[in-house]
Image (cartoon, rainbow over all chains, first blue to last red; front, side, top):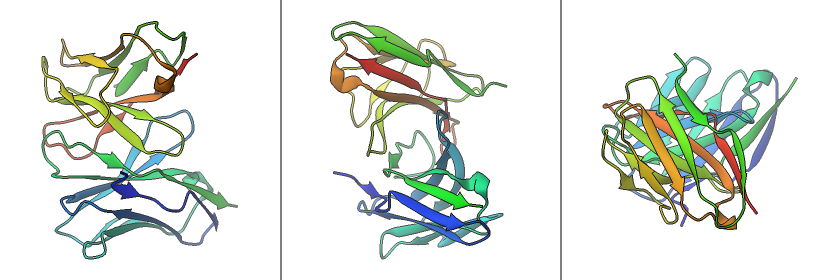
Length: 114
Length: 112
């Protein structure tokens, strides 16, 4: 059973606008969440993370929001750029330290239209 | 600093054949992982290692074996390949603080 879900397989956004990617999880033990970005024929690359002690984390154009009661997190990209076009994976783990087994969502393909 | 590298990049096997996928990292990371990615699914953990000489099962370990004889290398073996093992395989590593994992470029394996 998928413990991390990304219900939108794709999203198209105009350049300069906000992109919002959503992720839901079912395991209440998850306390560390990450977003990865993947280009074709490459491995995923780390984008941003958030621990369950926070509800928001920012890094430049990227902000991740965590709503623990709803078991929901979202990634906001502002402003969106054509180079942001990629597949975005949400991932979650129990614990941040040590060998943390990551559970991934199925990904959302973001297309930023120039 | 190459990060995480994987060989080969592509491979086609016949059912029943065996092969080994090699992962190497030059970041002196303690932890290494093997994932598979299938269409419509997220990455799923096959096996992982918390240090040289240690391995552990992940979410989908059946049909695979692994070895970590050197800290920088993590090998994934298929003893008798099956069509269900057609997938893209990713290796990753992370340091002792855990957190983010660094991924290799992937190996696309087709079993006919």
